[in-house]
Image (cartoon, rainbow, N blue to C red; front, top):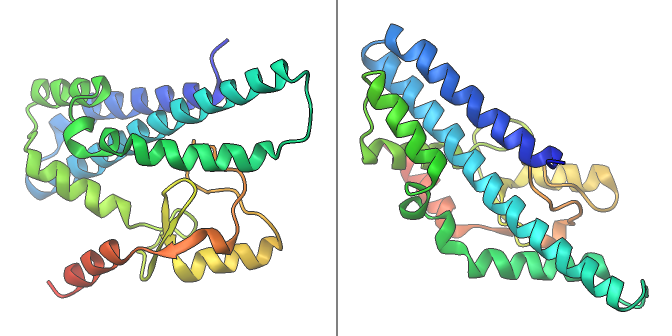
Length: 207
């Protein structure tokens, strides 16, 4: 039986592809460029969700196998092990999340083919702009991030004020709001300001 999260990701991608086929031919100029930018951003996000899902699934399987071998002993903090291994795996597989790798992903290549058939543009520079722009929207408020903080466990970025507010409101551990993320519990101590993204946001503000 297919996992619900993986099914959500596949359904989301299929919806984007269907939308491009149905809508792109009716748009022109800046409107078409903006639409393509938004759709490419969604595809990139779904691909990253899938990569994170696969990493989390493999880690959970290894931990489950460990429990089976140990006959279900509870002398180990499995949640901490999962967080540590997930963070390590994200760092080890960081190249898979780069645009150079994402452009080779089957779903991204399929999107490019659909755009070409529909008479749209598939300029690589547009892809980069699209990705950068979509990265800096807070997943809770859906507003532009002012001060970016990165989750040290899963690597997702939030607006600092919003994230701290959610942590305080939860009075405990907070689930990452990014759809498909398997990080089900983090605290304010797991957040750190992302200086690189902060500089990008500041430079964009000065344009």
